[in-house]
Image (cartoon, rainbow, N blue to C red; front, side, top):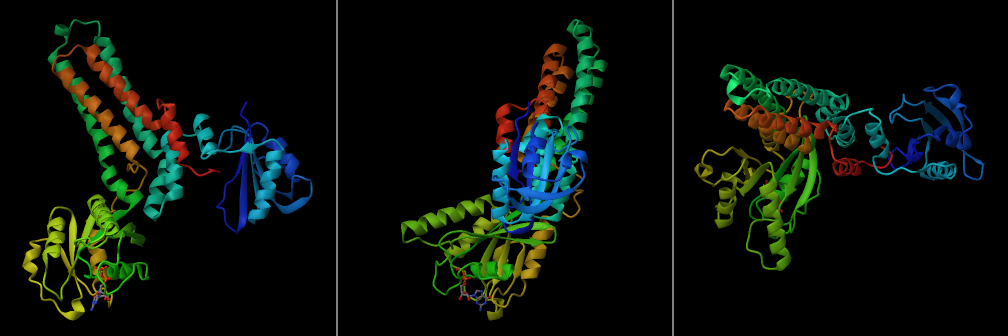
Length: 448
Ligand code: GDP
């Protein structure tokens, strides 16, 4: 018996339509109490009717649809009610739904039920969040393909091949170790090598996949007054960062996002590198340094119209230690810097004030993080959990291959293979612990 849950599945804002989702054994009964349309007569078809509040008065006219178990998202009897998207109407209908016997759904509970009822594996359920959170078309495309099972199928195929190799091992288990020919050992170990290589290459796709899903963190560093905030504003076309002639006005980090081609850029304007006079300033600078260290790329900004000082040199040293682009700003005032100090680092000259050269800077960033060539067919790993779990599995497969090749008893090597299969099951959900599952679904919104 599945108790019946309900929630508003659309965003909490005034809109043309708002959808209430109901799932569980009593869905139809609950629906009959709040909606006059005869949804039970025509499963999977939209039916018109009026929505009733808890006191039985009509509060809206809309549509309803019934999905009979197991042919529904959750695999349970479900109903969706399409109301007008007034928050008052939705609250009223939802209240009536609760009074008719449903209880409020927890975050992600609909998708969790879909997973528990075998409608999808864990990779597909996680792709649902990624799809909702996607900021670029590529991220959405990859998430949609994962929701369709692309990654889950690759992981399951890997697991199936390991299972069949484990079966070959079982055949050896009764042999004394010295009776297994080295050539037989090599054949099986080679197969394992190729599977560990496959696991590593799926995990390796995360380097680009992370950029597709999360975008690029770009930290702007440099001493005060070189034009970091002006550059941020020029890139965004807004006045988000405070620009003034006084030094040290950007006290803390300011973060804004923009999309360029298929890339989401998260720009972080940091407090300028300088000697801090006050505690809050010191904290601001520390936070800025941390942001610069965590960034995928650092844009070190210099004022081309004035000589480099020790804080500029500090920014330059930092730029040399990481992936970076040097920006010489205030091109409109001429450049007096000897550019040989940049020592082979990519350099772009701009005027943030006149917004010239910023397009070249964006092109350079896009070139470094080229993602348009990536096949967003759902087989690119975008989720850190999947990547780290795959690496654990890959390690186990490698242990098994090396151990068997070097003469370990088959039953010892087989335990590594079994462990690898188990680890892969954490990705698809076949062997994931409850705590992992709970953690994953807690990141969903209510109504999904
Ligand atoms: P930050 O402290 O590095 O964030 O620097 P700001 O963006 O606050 O800029 C400091 C000063 O430099 C302001 O007066 C800006 O108007 C000026 N500035 C910034 N970019 C340019 C530029 O490209 N050309 C000129 N002439 N002035 C600029």
